[in-house]
Length: 275
Image (cartoon, rainbow, N blue to C red):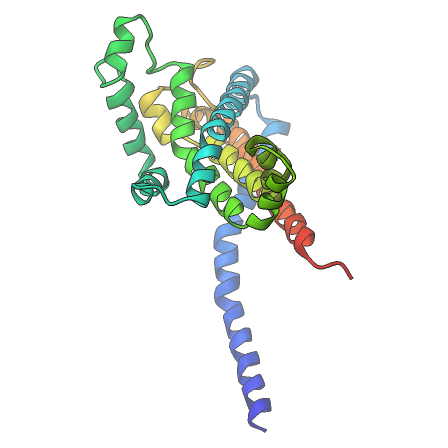
């Protein structure tokens, strides 16, 4: 009897939780739905800055691809080291890697400017050699990498930690070198986490705004990525053009979240026992 009463109370609590869940769902979903609706209407009815939008989209795709490649190249060995060993200073390294996640983007952009600016710690010697980084496409890539790399390192570190070390040792016993062990055992087994980390890193780089506008500026065709194009069009009173560009970013975000979930499901399926 007490068990049945507990079940009824649990059911009542579940029904009561539907109200705040519905309120939160509407609060989070309604602006996105309205934005997408206005974006579709804007494509049909309003004259748009198609050339500027295309230039911003192309720049965003190129710079995010480069920043993602740079992140994977530098972040993979770091994540593997943090997952396999605890070297001296690893706690400090993990803190430094995670710090851009919690830093306000504007603070990140200002910090990059102080380091790579024409009078910065690194930027001044480079400027003396004729290499200017601020307000160039390189600055966009650096800003994207700075704010997005931690997402890949965190995901890769978790993926590497989940790999069974016995399988790696078995490959070494069979004569495989460290590169072969990583290529044939470690990376495939951690593939789901690596792929999810890459997708989230690319999405964060695509949506980067604050660090980019402070460190790289907003120059059409050079540093104006899609988020900066949205801001520039809105500031110029071109609401429809801004809404359409924002809708494209929302569609990209939805695609990214769908990809992450599909990767997660496939990863779970790979570890389910076969009947």
